[in-house]
Image (cartoon, rainbow, N blue to C red; front, top):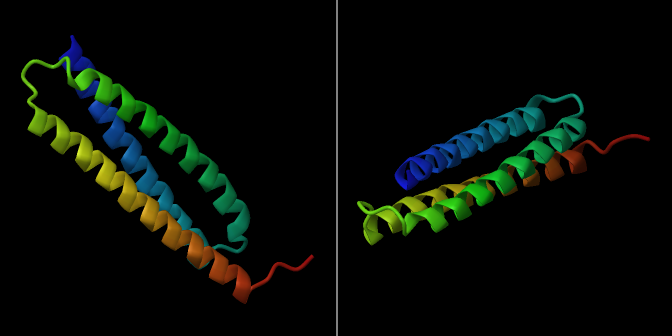
Length: 113
């Protein structure tokens, strides 16, 4: 049963990361092409934060369950969890880049009141 939970949570973590990648792509498009990228960016960032929180909760569940899977050795466990963390950090770095682009866009095209 624990192995099934592990697999389900691992699939959930990967799905969450894919969803975050899609949001990043939409953010990039909004920054490049959007008429008013700030409203869209705000909505997308709210979704991003929700997904990131869900991903972290899933990561914690994976950590708890990892020790209870009999045919999962330490190396496999660490490799799997490290891979998820690396991908999450890469997405964080990409998000920072997109937010910097949004800031540059704002400096070049200040909103008029």
